[in-house]
Amino acid sequence: MITYLGFFGVLTKNVIRIYKTENVNILPLIYDKNLDGNVIKHYNNEGVFIHYKNPYGLCGYSKSPCNLIDVNIKKEKKFGYVMFKKTNR
Image 1 (cartoon, helix red, strand yellow):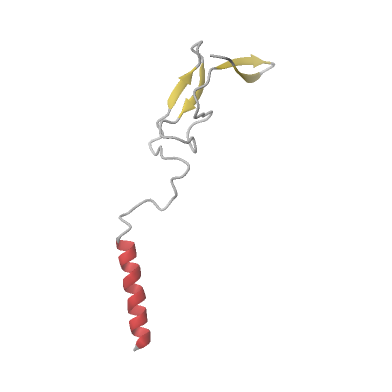
Image 2: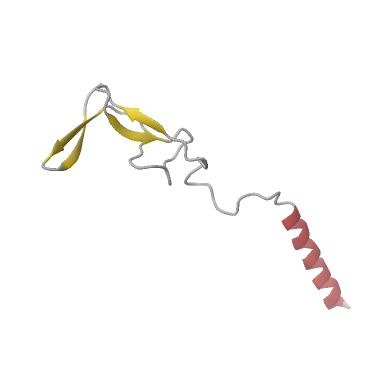
């Protein structure tokens, strides 16, 4: 009898817990809250595309290259490599 009451109590407790979750996502959203994939293109002072910026915070799984901070960067190509240099505003 005690076994049946214990089993029924545990089952009821878990059913109530599952019912209260309200269909929230089981994956953690600590890296990316941008579920639609909308990003903003960021250009330097010369009008050259430099990086993407996620308006919802961290870059996480957004398009690359992504940066959180608005900085003025100069983009150069040398010997087939793309080089980024930070410049003063």
